[in-house]
Image (tube, rainbow, N blue to C red; front, top):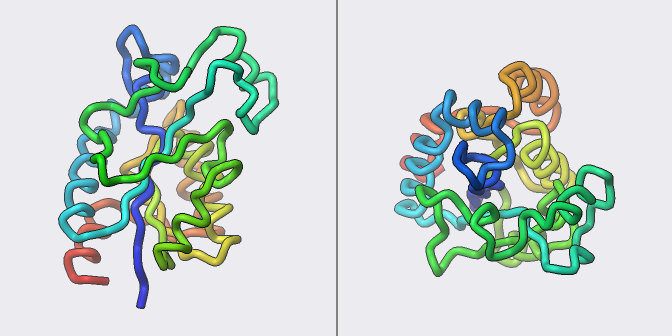
Length: 199
C-alpha cells in the first residue's frame, strides 16, 4: 500500500516575501502572481487532516557557513552577505505554512534537500513510498528533489500550482518539459481529491 509524504520545499521569507527580508524579488513576484502560498496552506491543512507525513525543508546556514554542501559562487555569496543564517527572519518559513511542533524540519546547505540531510532515511523509516512536492523555485529545489527521490525508488508527484520560479517561462519549462521525464505533474485539487479518497 502506498504511503504518501508531503514535502514543503523552501517556503521561506527570503524566497516568498516581497518585504524587507525578501532576497528574491522576481521569485516573490511569481509566488504572489500564482497564489502559491494560499494554495500551499490549503494543501498543507488537508494533508494534516488526512494524516499524511509532512516534512518542511529550508535553506539555512550556521554562522561558520561550513556545513553548506554547495560550494558554488552563488552559495558563497550567502556567506559574504551573512545571509540566510539559521534563526534569522529571512530564513524563517512564511507564517501561512509554518510547521507544527510535531512536523520535522530538514535544514539543507544546498539546492537538493536530500544531500547532507537525513531526509532519505526519515522517509524510508516512515515507510513512505510516494512523495508530493511543492516549493520554490520549481527548477531548483523542486526539480532537484524530484530527481533524487525517483532515483531513490520513490514515486514522485509534483504539485505544480504550489510551485513558482523566477519567471513564468522557467516554471513552465520545468513542468512541461523536464519534470514529466521522472515525475507525475499534477495540481493541488487533484492531489486533495486523491488523499480524500485514501489513494
